Length: 257
Image (cartoon, rainbow, N blue to C red; front, side):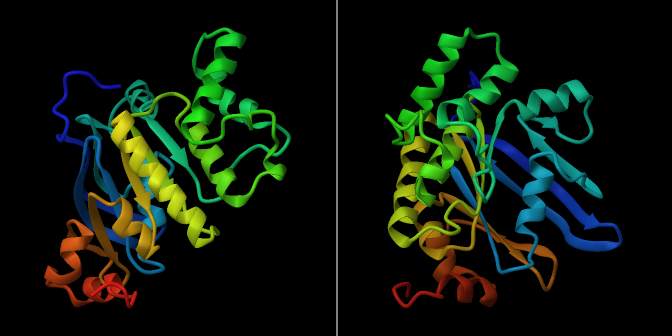
């Protein structure tokens, strides 16, 4: 983990980011920051560019222009060595969990540890089982993905994303495909890990219950204007945001007034 950094200082800064696929502009002049040890949610309707922004932040899509800074290092403008240094600070949980079906959970979680460390086989096995324990899967190390429920697969994917003790965890629609109970359990797990480990979470989601449960901060992307409309805590934006589209998005549930 990063040392000697103020707990709530920005760890991630996005400045005037322009994203496009060929000639099709997806997002324009997006700027925001994410504080260390907090959870920021990227929200908005379908087609607003949430997943595109995530791809740029995790190094899969080069921006048309603008900067993505992690601890003041530019992800896209630095050397390959600097980019590699930034990516080692990351853990990523993609929407499907992306577990290898032919490997048990210990082997799935062990894979990045084997690739990026010189630990012994026994040390890697112990560390993988420890990560599984952190997400509530103690005793499931020898199970295969096909033997797990959807919620357990998501937790196993999260354990693998945490394998190298990342400073930032990027989660892409973590509640997708989960029933309300398992979605709530995953939200609780995110909050527990944030508090206990001090990890920064960047979560892409449109699930309203999760947004209010996990977000310390949020940004709202708008498909019509191809822009970031507002940044703020969802519980405050629901009643005090100047943008009607944001208020409508956050009031979709009858339980939110």
